[in-house]
Amino acid sequence: MGVFVLLPLVLPLTAWPVARLAEHRLHPRPATLLLTAAAVVLGLCSTLCLALLAIVGTAQLPGNPLPDAWADPEVRAAVPHDEVIGKGAIGALAAAATACATLFLRHHRVRRRTARALRGLPAARVAVLPDDIPYAHTLPGRGRAGRILVSTGMLAGLDSRERRVLFAHERAHLAGRHHRYLLLAGLAARANPFLLPLRTAVVYTVERWADEEAAGAVGDRRTAARAIAKAALISRPAPAPTMAALAAVPGPVPRRVAALLGPAPAVRTWPPMFTTVGMAAWTAAAGAVLSAMSSANSAVTMYLILKAATPL
Image (cartoon, rainbow, N blue to C red; front, side):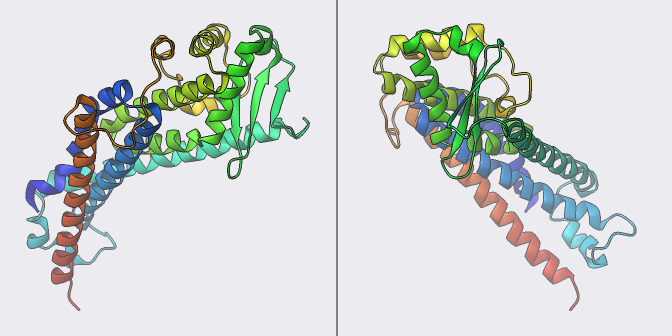
């Protein structure tokens, strides 16, 4: 395998320019799908790479449960600088697993706490909370079900048309299951920190996706831009944790407003290759495929080496 076993760990560096180009040039819906898919593939591949390296590192530790033959020189020779990289991979894999588990548990804990806090309210799609603090969030449910949580303080700060934009924006989050993309991108970024630009880009593109849906629902992009800007200016953090806490900052608002003041982006399932957008999409796809192939090759090679080294 040689240095190729390390390829999935560094290929996520290609995510940096890809994320920048995709969030600026692609329609937000395909951009979200592309960036999330690339993040998941690259995150899984880098995790598999760490697991393979950790096998070599663990096999060298005294008292490990693995067969002694797995520390055979032939196995160790498959990894460059096996003593350092193999043992370092153990800590890296443990840190990645802990970070992913923490995010996943936090996701479910926030969802459960928010649902518990709403038990006394009527089971309507929109829950208007008597609170002077302006905020609006969503609580995803099973399938495409879910609830929109909005405070009276937020509604008081918007006129009737701006409220339509607000509700259309939040409905788009629920219909598009945007929390799933945020969770997947967040897990990938915790598996490999080089994927943080993809996660940041997904946070932005899901908001832009909802912005475009809201603008289409009300039929006026300027009204949508004004509502998004106004809601961002007056909004405050909710008094209790909500699903919005998992997305951190919901994308740079000035960029979102500027995008709404411009023409609607063209919807393409896959952009032409010989364009800036196409190069971003194809680079992301090529990086993900190359990482997956490298991981598969390393896994098969390591399996064959371990099988040959392990006595029957």
